[in-house]
Image (tube, rainbow, N blue to C red; front, side, top):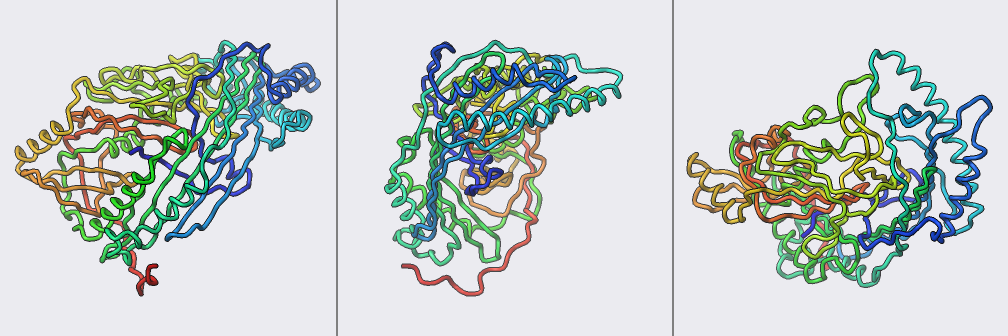
Length: 557
């Protein structure tokens, strides 16, 4: 089952609305010449852009050398059920324009690195005049801000003896790329029925109802979202991209007798509603989660003595580790003015150095639309700066060969490799699409487990295997005895699980790739196999235990 990330429900305010989750529609895009683009929104944007190119200049000030218009049109539907009853149902739509104006030239311009531009609400209908008014007001503000930022930046650069050799903004060939528009496409009533039943299974299903009184929350939800994005700039790029995504989820919580809070969260994520898990599969997952939650309640707390030794991570757990330790560090973000660093993060000085074992390689390929027959959320054809997506060899035989980058160059990486990506209404930054980890010597699950047991026998002690993570801590962690038997434990934390561990402690990788589709602010996919680490510290977590409820819940239905 695919893992997922989710965000809280989004009220109608613009600030929170811009943080809404996006999921892309992966399909065959249509490329067409600019003269054949027949879209009223793009036409209105182009007309206003041409007007601004001629008239946008204050007396005695510079004209912009680059202007970009982006219109984000997104729709969402969400239904939530708790304890077997529907508690919320919402549907919304919003349009936002973002205008970016750059003063100076490609070498040195007004950009600040924090994201430049102005955001303005846009009309929800296709009224071209109203849209042009929104673009006009946003352009005026963005231009004035850019003039101020440019003067401030030039003054700041005078303080440094040396300047960066790379340009502030990369030159790119104009792209014209048009994709079909998307609408929400989901059977609302059917999915409402499913989440109502799923959230009540703790009490209604005979296989788990015996411990219903121990369940403190049971929430199921269904979400559907679409984004139609329009982008044009003064270089001639014209882009209309179309994204969609759906997810169903279950979230369960309980407490052990000592007060430790325990949780299980699961669900499926898909590009289309038809690719979500079936009701029988969803029901089975909820029942399994309830059973493991009950098992966690009864499980012993991890040993008080700190452990240093082998830990086998499933693909699910390994994906969480990779997303936390690796992903951000290969997304090249420009460092602060006056610094000599290549980029930010743990891998700022790791270019051409070993960051993984020699038997592991990593590529990021947004053009990988499907994996094992399912669409991938992180896939796209053209990025959010209008640059065609590219397959990038990030790590080859353990060595960092490339960073993922948009149109803000860093040292040794002067042009975009198609990884400039933007959340709704937000500026574009360097972000991954479909990140794939592979091993030159992959092992089967049985071979990995055998190697773990061999290490246990050699070291004459128990070892660990983690099935799922909850944030940075193990959620389903098993103590593995040398004879192969396993015991579920709770209350553990990993220590010293860091970038050094990725470089030096991975002993083997599996042939069982796990697809982790992340529904954060940006849609991203990470495909990671099981990983066997040779030395990880496992210790008892120091979280304060909470008091149990003073009296039992009301009787179940």
